[in-house]
Length: 115
Image (cartoon, rainbow, N blue to C red; front, side, top):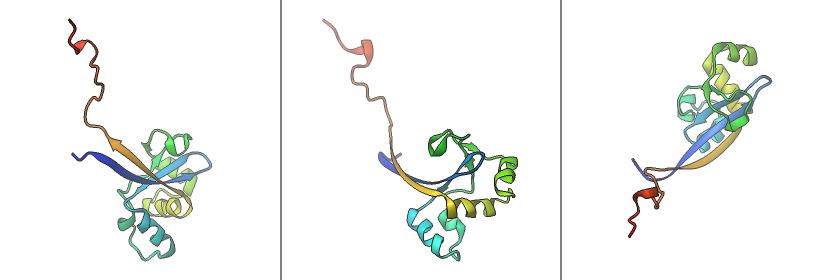
């Protein structure tokens, strides 16, 4: 595994009953797609999952959106149609998170030598 920062880009759509999230591969590809719909969605998306945050905005716990929730919000549960609405009307958020590999606590509790 690599150390360092890992970039994540998500699009948050605040629906009337829940908040929806999709992840995109590259923010630049999303910007291009928004003006040129001939770009395949597969180039824009990082996976075809639609998540809900249970009304906790863009920062809530992500669960896969059930078809019934998609039907209620978007009038369909066809993923391609729902994803298009989220990508068009949602807010892009770029974040970086560092991947931590090990315990960085230098004291290690009682493991330090005592005389």
